[in-house]
Length: 290
Ligand SMILES: [Zn+2]
Image (tube, rainbow, N blue to C red; front, side, top):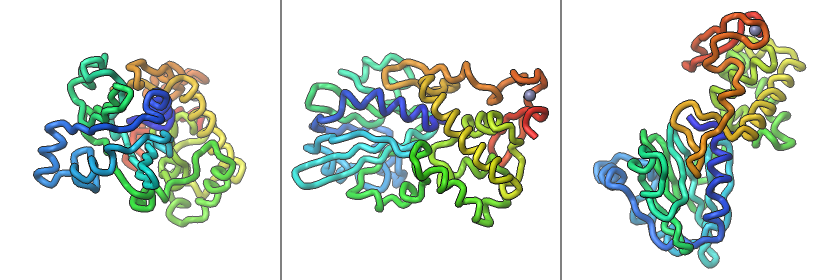
């Protein structure tokens, strides 16, 4: 699943080509249309396809931003504003191309679902092999509460204080730290890969009950999350499954992983252990993380 660094790269890949462009048409795939017809919210959520078109066509993409694992497109039309909120799900991706046929990877070429036709002649294409992704079209963010509850971006000044304050919640106090840092109300955008890597970096066992960590350990976990997310961005994200950039290039963070799906610990040489914590596969070194 794309995590913060991967989503950041998707955003950076499309941003220069779509910013300032007017949307002149929107096309949906047969799967999206058929899904809506039977009441399934395939990709396009919370709005009819006709209304989605009405609130997109003629609008100009003023800016593209990332919030946690969401990509937001701010649309302007005279005095009106709409926001496209998109989530890539398990394996979605945005591509900018002259045509769908120009998408290099066959699976993404085949599984396109939404095309925004831009007035510069390019197409902004959303492809999703598994169709777990989504695109919403709202007048304001408050129409989609789950984006409002997300913690501050991890690289902002207020993020650490926000994270530390979450330890006062009983619910989080009793959780393994690994499960707690996956909550987007606690830290924005830290998914499974980066949570495993951060706890190795902090040398903290992922099973440790959050409430038992010292203040220094809590701070160390946060600093390690920020460190591995930054490393992920610098390396173009992790390409373990289907993930590719908007230009079809792959990230190289998978070559820098210390524990996630690794066999032996690069620090001590012991086997990396796998456990399920909060329903998610967790990889760690029992010797280095205690
Ligand atoms: Zn080790």
